[in-house]
Amino acid sequence: IISVREEEEENGSRQRDDGSWKKIREREGKDLLYVERCQQHRWRCAEVTFTCSDEAVCQHWVSSIREQLASNTSRPKHLLVYINPYGGKRQGKRIYEQKVAPLFTQAGISTSVIVTEYANHARDHLKMEAELKKFDGVVCVGGDGMFSEIIHGLIWRTQIDCGVDPNSPEEALSPCSLRIGIIPAGSTDCICFATVGTNDPVTSALHIIVGDSQPLDVCSVHHNNMFLRYSVSLLGYGFYGDVLSDSERKRWMGPARYDFSGLKMFLTHHYYEGTVSYLPARGIIGTPRDATRVKTVLAAVTSKVKSVCLGFFHPESSGEWRTIRGKFLAINAASMSCACPRSPKGLSPAAHLADGTTDLILVRKCSRFNFLRHLLRHTSKDDQFDLTFVEVHRVRRFRFMPRHCQSDSDLELDLHENSKRQIFSQICKDHPACGCAPAYSSWNCDGEILTHTAIDVRVHCQLIKLFARGIEELPVFEDLTNPCAI
Image (tube, rainbow, N blue to C red; front, side, top):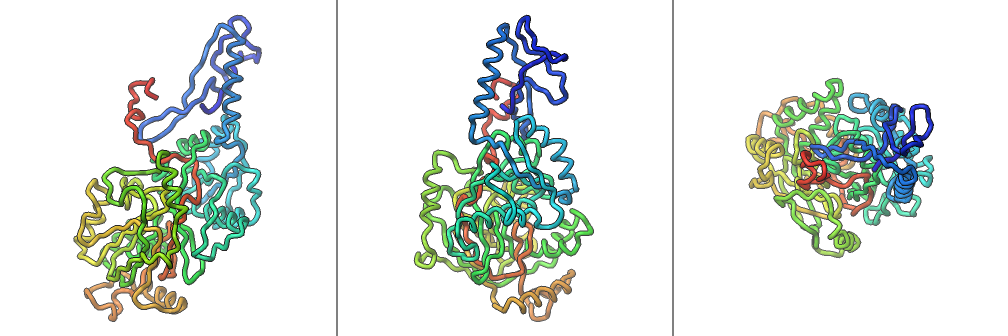
């Protein structure tokens, strides 16, 4: 239930004869507004009108429902909302004002709205200025980039308040107390697809209103004991890093730049040499190659997952690190499925949202034809890991070191020079010395470029919570022919 309102006549007087409720003539008025599940994981508002011959009974029902809603501590009452007016198709402000704000008003949620004016405005405000104790949650209206701003500001603020050093890769980070809501309004809405199942703003708003809570793992990325970024979805080196770097230079093309850069990087077919070290996950449920997708951690195993998270042992003393050396077309770490409209299953369909692990996917050097087979499996039902040149490991932590380790300044200079030459230039096959192929790629961290190549990545179990519940897949939710099934 979203809200309940007592019926009144058009002139404002209460119906005294039979105590019945009639349709409210106000524009947004409803008798009883509640959530109704629709197809494709979407939620919608529905209404029902109750009638009763006894006015006292009617009033008792209204009061009881309102008391139940008010006593529900999981439902937010005060929200801090950040709107990105420039993301996606620049529709963030309109989407919030027309589709979301009226629902929050109906549910009795008060909001403090900030329209961001520059990049990282929301991050900086959360870090330094926001009075977080006044709110029950933080909501971002935008795409994955806006969500990244929110988590960076909120996690950093939480660590400083708790006396934790975010720059230390060995520190166990303190979980954030405030839940985060996402109203999708960007060009990519990967987080919404993986945690709700759709990028529909109304559905996301309703999850916030009813007070859903979905814990989420967060990866911290460090370089030489220096904090770089947090990641919740994809860390990609090689192909996905190159696509992002090339597309950033073609922003004038709009969303089409991703298709163009993807084709270009596929044709250039760059590979990169390096060493991957990882700490395997122990005592967890499932594997990256499970046939059944697991989108969330079930309540029955929550205690087990938490015990595994709390039992994260010190990596240096465990002696369980494993090392892989080779030539790679892509190195990807997926902390969630990374599903989107073009890839309904995502990069790792069986990735868990909150078990303290990430799926490390290594695509070794192979022919263009074989690499195309791998890419096409992201859009099909075939097992995308069932290829000889692809391997996947569920890990708690991993490190990558390129073959030739240089200083940061030399590496950034090499990357800059290589970016000038990368135009369908690879002709020969195995001669990096001739300048046809770069020696280094860059990391794609949730859609942001990391020029530091050597990184240390650690998964922090259930560091944040979203206003979501994972993707529901019970058959009854699709039985729309029987209203009683809802």
